[in-house]
Amino acid sequence: MQKITLTQPDDWHLHLRAGAALKDVVNFSAAQFRRAVVMPNLKPPVTTVRQALAYHAEIKDALQNPQDFEPLMALYLTESTHRDEIKRAAEHPCIHGFKLYPAGATTNSEAGIGSLQNIYPLLEIMERHDVPLMIHGEATDPHIDIFDRELAFIENSLFEIIERFPGLRIVLEHITTRHAAEFIRQAPAQIAATITAHHLLYNRNALFQGGLKPHFYCLPVLKREEHRLALLDAAASGERKFFLGTDSAPHPRHGKENACACAGCFTAHAAIELYATAFASVNKLDKLEQFASFNGPDFYGMPRNSSQVTLQKTEWEVPAGYTFGNDTLIPLEAGRVLTWKFDKTPQNSQ
Ligand code: NCD
Ligand code: ZN
Image (cartoon, rainbow, N blue to C red; front, side, top):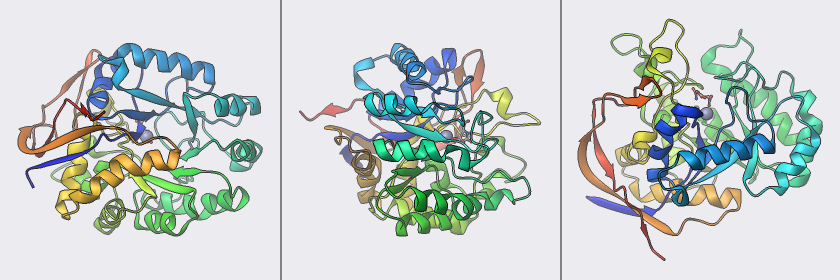
């Protein structure tokens, strides 16, 4: 296959940051995706509708073609989120859900949830108003092995949330294990998951191959090969519960190449190409559109995109770095050759 055409995809999990960094990264996503759920883990976090609308305006301002890309805003859930904020979020067309970060689980999660019980009254309101909950599903107890934290969260917290709030729509974000994929498959219809391109392409060896490789460090951390294969099987299965969420998470080079490196892989420069590479590796390119363009909007109850995009089988070299404020951004696969190339101009089929 030399060329594939698909309905324009959306990214259901994206970090865009703010200020100069935002300006430097947002157009990579806008070039490929029609919409993206923008994560609220800024400093300070985006906890209110008012803040989300200001952030939405800042993103629109940073876009080269603002009419071509729609940021879908998510609010950061805290133990002190006001119940009225949930009602306001439910009513506002720009807001598409709340993000639950267990406190300490990942980058800028300090304001997240310490004890789940404390937010049960909030989850009840979200359930009542049909506001989706996006979850960073990792247990934070430092005694739990880092490779087991996703499973521990599913067993210790997610079962209970689903049992208590059976009507709550939940997206388990960036799943990384066979356990999570199996769990999502057998869970009720309102429970879904996003999967990143890097978790489909790499296992944990990438972190240590020939030395410590901080640009492969993200959270949840890469897992064993058996988990990568299970994720690839889920993503390319065509099942409606799995959809694209890049979790593209840019950090300045000095933050990544650091004795205390921050977590996050930047993939927006080649997002759909990386997914295509993963799907092609198992001869499932025919399932890419379902995963990248259909399952997400169907889950969120939004229309599928009407524009189409094309991927060509052409070799191109990923740049060694991009400008990122007054630092550099090292993209995933920097300096390596990719075999799929996105055609930058979506043709509107209408
Ligand atoms: C994300 C970031 O940098 O904001 N990092 C990451 O490793 N994925 C936060 C997150 O989604 O966990
Ligand atoms: Zn993320």
